[in-house]
Length: 185
Image (cartoon, rainbow, N blue to C red; front, side, top):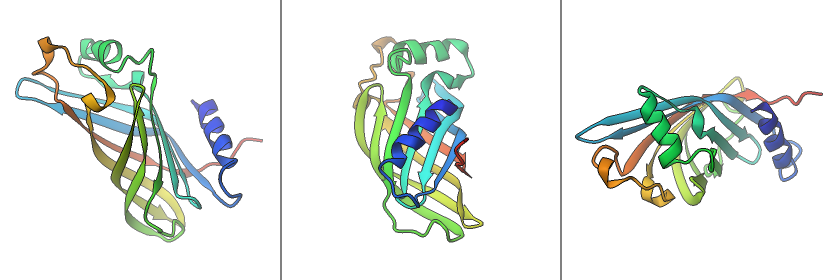
């Protein structure tokens, strides 16, 4: 996981100005929820990687799909094997940019809009995600967002036998704590 973070930060550094400082989280929390009249399904991971670049306002996320924990082991198996096919598509990935021209060195809580590409189950979709970013002591410190994922948009098929048990649109919420990324020498 840390090797990937180093790779992402190194690769992105080629495209960003030298003064573009990165802030990262390797234990971001992602929660999803499916509510139907027959069953509620939810899962959580705390292994998501988030990176925010202060100068360019670029945002990147990588979520290992097989790290989601469910209350029932069978749900977890079905999620990984039948729906997201985590062996074939191990990560959900987001690359975007904060649209607002905010000063990420000025303390405060900011409502943000992030436009970018969300890749889930091998299908890329353009997304506009609303969130919040808190700046403390002149540095991005906390982030959160919530959005919906329509399963059909990512070619995730639900068998007719369980169609009434799984919502067509899944609610996603996430939060992460950021720290300045300092490369190891």
